Structure formats: structure tokens, C-alpha cells
Image (tube, rainbow, N blue to C red; front, side):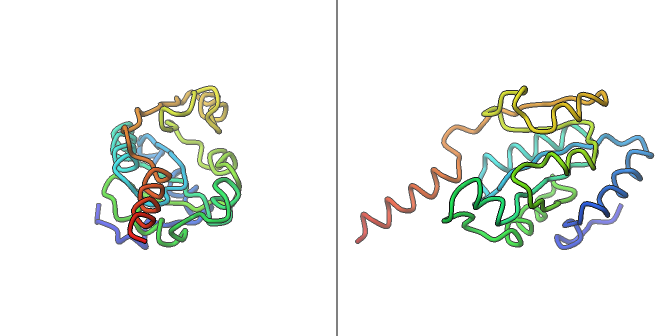
Length: 167
């Protein structure tokens, strides 16, 4: 298979449903994870690497800018959805990125019907959006341990503290 450029990895949901259908017909296992991925850090990259190991195709659902603002407040995201999508697409572990507008990825998961749904271990499996959809078709939900000290909020806090100490 030829390597795709980062722009080729960002797909609309309708196109991605067709890709998933084709790949599943080849017997491949589809893995899905989602998040804001604002200020990409090693916690994110480790989660994505481990998620990719659980199947043949890793799709990342990315919260749109409006969705991030509704979840995190008016000062977020720090990076636009296009910047975040490009950064995620540059990672070898990520096969495709799909941006969703809703507060949660439930509709995206229902459309894609992944075999494995991955979240960070800060989520209880019972609370993972899409769990019923995935488990209902025989798939599984996997939580990945967090990397201590790696969070976007923590990075922002450190930057603000450094800026205040230099005033």
C-alpha cells in the first residue's frame, strides 16, 4: 500500500464509511478513538500507538472547534481543527481522521461501526460513548493507561505560570 500524505488522511464521514466497508471486506479490524487532541503531547501519541496495535486500521474522531469550545470553554481549542487534524495525520499510527461537530462521537461511531473502541483510562468503560454500539455488534472497548503528567490542561497551566513569572 502506498503512503498517504497528511491531507489524504482527513476524510468526511460518508467517504470513510465506504473505506471501512472495503477494509472490513478484506478481513481487517477497525479501531476508533476520539478526542480534542489540542496541543498534541506524548500521552496522545502513546494512546494512538497502542490503539493502532489493536487492529489494522486506526480512525481518529476529532472534535471540531465548536465542539471543543462547548466542552472546554471559550479559550479552547488552542489549535484549530485543521491544525489538529494535520498533526494527527502526520503520525504513522493514524490511518484516517474524521472531524465531528457534535459534543460526542456517538453518531460517528454508529456510522463507522468499529471493531475496537479505545479511550484513555480516565474513562470508565461503562461511560464510553459508543460502547453499546461496538459491543452490540461483538466488538470491544479498550482503555489505555494515561501517561503521568501529560495533559493539555497541564501544558497550558505551565505556560501561563511561566509567562506570569517573566512579567
